Length: 249
Ligand code: PEP
Image 1: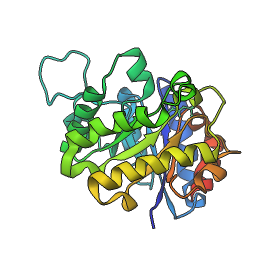
Image 2: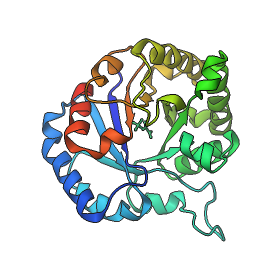
Image 3: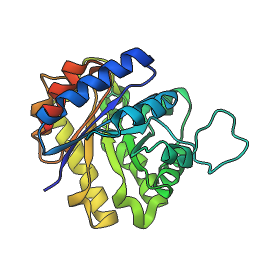
Image 4: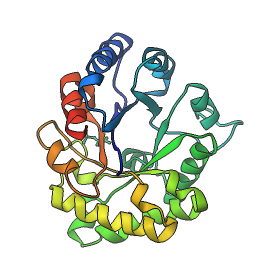
């Protein structure tokens, strides 16, 4: 039986006082979220230290929203997996569609980032997903399989250690979520691909992301291959994020 996982992606939001208030509310509500699921927040790099300090004594994990593929060196502005490890990060999101789109991240770069994270014991949350144009052209399956295949190929025997997040680009931040059936269909494709590559897909976590809200989370999480969610906008409001976590627990 796989555990559910709900991860908040704060993106480039937050401030010290707002973060402290949000995390305090999550910590206070954590016992009510149910024992059947894990909860994490992926915060901007600069807030990792404070997040770690505030969450250290609780049962909420934390992570980053990106990681450098390089171990160290002259890479101005980059943050290495070793640095994230020092901050106690459990997760690093890689290949988010915003980074693929605005920073031209290729499948190969995403794979290298996933490998760098795993090399430091940080679980990469590998995002895959199609644009609306690709969906309308009937390319959803080939796009997500291509994106995932690059990571599987690079991680090789460690591929079963990643978390995969299916995030249709047309559903991110748009208020238009995939139906549970649409999401499940893609999750099943991804799990079959993971099974063929690792032989351990039954224990792998595949999250859904894209306009998950308190009122649609339970139906999505009830699908057999949806193991939780990667939550953007709704992770910034304590009441909404807590309700989503409860739907998973
Ligand atoms: C995301 O950014 O990963 C995301 C899923 O955003 P939202 O929940 O706001 O659609």
